[in-house]
Amino acid sequence: MKLSKMSKDELELYSYTDLAAMILKEEKKSLTTPEIFKKICKLLEMTDDEYASKIGDFYTSLTTDKTFILLEDGTWDLRDKHSVKINLEDDTEDEEDLAETEDELDDELDDMASEDMHDMDDDSDIDDPDLDDAVDMEDEDLTIIDEEELD
Image (cartoon, rainbow, N blue to C red; front, top):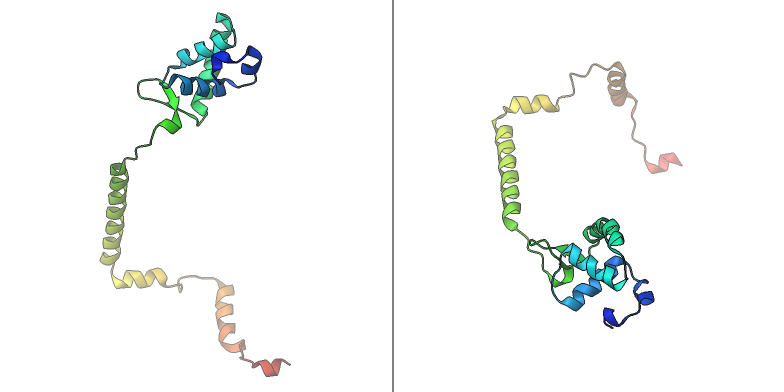
């Protein structure tokens, strides 16, 4: 049903964003924020003061509602009428930068002497008496028991 054929009471049951979506469907073209809100105010018989006090909130509603899309020319339209273009060039550059960083790290690791790599894994520099005792106990106090011996 066309909005112009609906009563004011029926129209008041809808939110401003619902009315905006209906207006954009009926108009079949994109409109600016003031154009859409003036049509809503006319339908709801709102005063100029009401228009002025509520247009800011209406704009916020349009920007947060995923139903609408703001076009480059500053007009609003329904999102489902538009496709999203994905720019793969930026992603490719990021992947290239990441690959270069990985290559640089690989080169640095290759350049490290094998001695340096061994030192990185060596835990003998740790001076912790509790750990030393645990290592000594490991060798002396451990015995392997078969399951039969546990019974």
